[in-house]
Length: 80
Image (cartoon, rainbow, N blue to C red):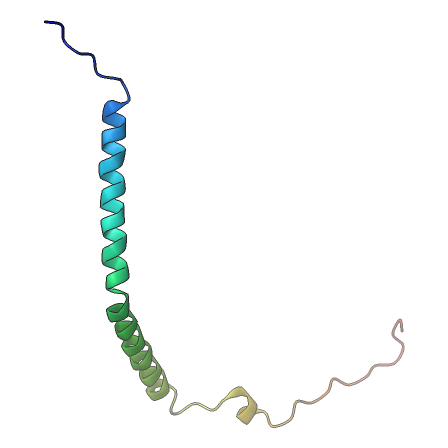
């Protein structure tokens, strides 16, 4: 009996098939959990906004600090 030869790319194709299958399964898992992560992201965002609001209670905004900016004085004798 003669032993049948295996093509050199057989194992590469087999490995690529398993890898693609694993990647597709991971993509399906991530997409199926998307709604859950959106809710978690919204909660984290709102918690951060609330924390930022409590941190900034004693501060005044830039517009409140300087009601009207003073124009720079004009100097004569310039180039223009």
